[in-house]
Image 1 (tube, rainbow, N blue to C red):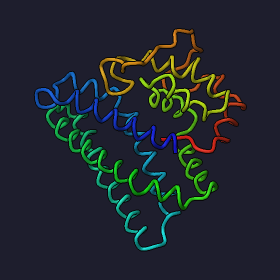
Image 2: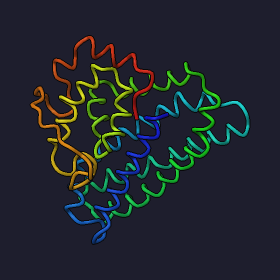
Image 3: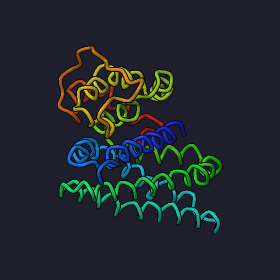
Length: 245
């Protein structure tokens, strides 16, 4: 469950920053649009992967008893209710409408924070009680399939941006050594070079975040270098018991 809770925390952090940059002057003006647009695609992608994997693989494995089915129906309904809010924020960004952005950002934050709390209070304890290791692994496999190795190259720096060194190490220990190495020499430095605002919907790096100043291999943002495409890295990725948002 370590990555599950860490991903929820990362979503909450982005929602806090989304509210911050859209709170002034009816949405924060044009500067808010630029800040949100820079990090929005990553946030939306990771949230979509997270929810679609839950709906397609995780919740069906818990179905059966009436009380449990009511909870699972509520989880899926909450996911569905968030989709129009994501679409409205997309539209506000496309239309350069900071007022609409501020309105819909507030609604998304309220809905998603409530959903995460509900899931952690009721659904995750049920998962711990009912799922076998094989069933939990199937959930991880589905998220890995949807995310891909190139997605992991963005997901892990996004997840760990601004966390303490101790917390980052706890999470990175889940990765095999080849992927931990790639994170330090390529993924994190690439993330640090992105424009201000793009890492986590913010204008300044979060307290505690550090930049790795070693010279990484060259690769375009969001893509894998030739080294990342090696067989050992692909093998490491598919062998993980759980990785993904």
